[in-house]
Amino acid sequence: QVQLVESGGGSVQAGGSLRLSCAASGYTYSSYCMGWFRQAPGKEREGVAAIDSDGSTSYADSVKGRFTISQDNTKNTLYLQMNSLKPEDTAMYYCAADFFEGRCGGSWSAPFFYWGQGTQVTVSS
Image 1 (cartoon, rainbow, N blue to C red):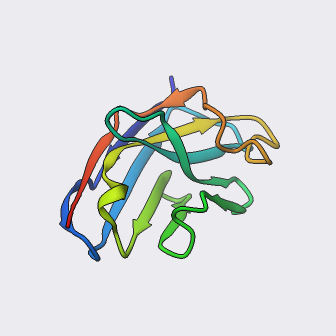
Image 2: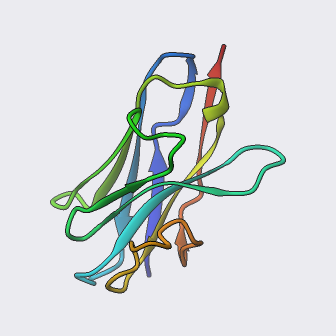
Image 3: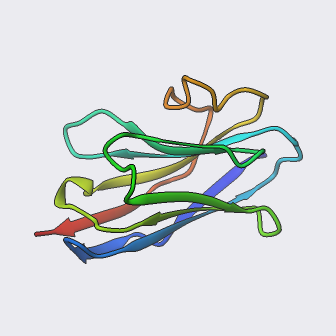
């Protein structure tokens, strides 16, 4: 059973940084796509970034140059380093995963099958 557990959220002032982590377990697939999504109150869930088993990455335009997605395969952990945070980055952040080749293609921000419980990020001005 696939499990995704996020951590690292919190409150920070604008311009600050946070690093989110997602511990993944319960899978043995060699091909995967893992991503970060976020949902602010009253808004739809949106894709933030994704990374595939080959290390290729994709980002939403709103976070390019500020956020970095990475993975540590030895720890089965996904990360999202968030720098230069803005109040509009305030949201619940979710880790997500899918396990088939090519998932992280052009439609990487489409909804995934497996989700974590989320971690709150609040950025104050």
